[in-house]
Length: 573
Image (cartoon, rainbow, N blue to C red; front, top):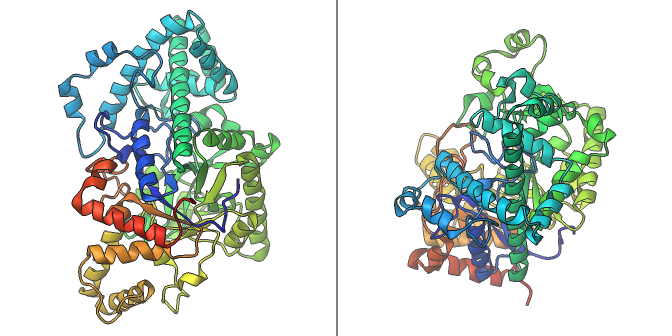
């Protein structure tokens, strides 16, 4: 179902791992999502957006998952009611008060959390085998149907996941034994292995975990329906070079290039990004190979997203048009950060970072990129059917992208603090200029919270580049409708309220806030270009229900609720 540009809504973005509930096991989970849906419904928020929920590798990044479709076991709720085969006895044996207390931390301890949940799921699977599979119960039939329905991807994933287990969690398949480095040779190996029965049982366990994951996320989607809250997922453009997809379906990917994004001065936290761009390490797609099979791999991704979510965001939609690619892997970035382009060209035998299939100049090349993007997005829309599609179109945006998104009925992004009239006239664009078919937000998971943004602006205003920052503060005040001669020198609840209401007043059909921007807090879930231990792991201090009950946060949330009503963005009566 296309996003309705004429219906104005409001929503919340929160990473699942950051959520809390009183009985969680050190990470947000599907049970926490019930609380998040209730929280949204209580405020009149009609969208709940999350980051990707796919199974992650050693870096725990949801944008570098080891499968494009397999879901993360660590995000599952571990209760007998939601895990077929799990008993209270299993839980009591594994979850002493000391274990539970060790998980009550400010950040997710991924190794501990993943190991614990897989241990509990393995014990539940043993019970499920003996009680359900052996007796062919209705649950066993449901599991068998899931395996059959997902035959295009599940067997390859379970074999890959079994090998990851054999290599003690190392998913970097190029470091495996030669007989394990491809799907065909690994199938031959497992058939000949003296431990084949045990290995096949582990594959069955991996399929069981995915069955449970899709059951739980479908239940969350259904619960959202009862509360009038639409869940929005996230589909990264790229996939991990060292994941199940590339390992199993090598012909769909070009591993000689490493996808990323062009240089952006905005990311001052990393000299490499500032000079060369962001090297994500993702493989480049062989579009002709995808085209030859009618984009079956992509259609599968979209179909399975729709099983869990009402809508989804395409992360880095620009990649569908052209991808900025590096002729080296991220591990070699440090080698190139001090090289000139001429030196880099010598080191790479004539190749430099560039757009593929080509640049956006001349016009003929841009037309090729535009045509490719339109073809791919039409395919995604066709596969999505009734599921809504939103496109993250930030960064260096070619001039043809946003008109095409409007033509296709796909909302792009509008981030007011980046929307300027021109490079010469740095005034913020007026609200009336924003497109109705758009998602307005102050930032994604890659951007600083509002509090940090304003405090940094004030700091620069009183620092060495004070004049330019002062001009920007004045522009911001005018955009907010405040006195540009006497801007606040400190962040306050009053200023926070003005920011909240202003975003809701935009003509954009969707207005979505990061959880930190609703609460007025400073947690940052990802700092691009850094290896910060807190990336993808920081958790909220309280449950969302406790924030609502707090005198300080409760007042801020009440203001948000009132602003949603005043701007007509609440649920229709």
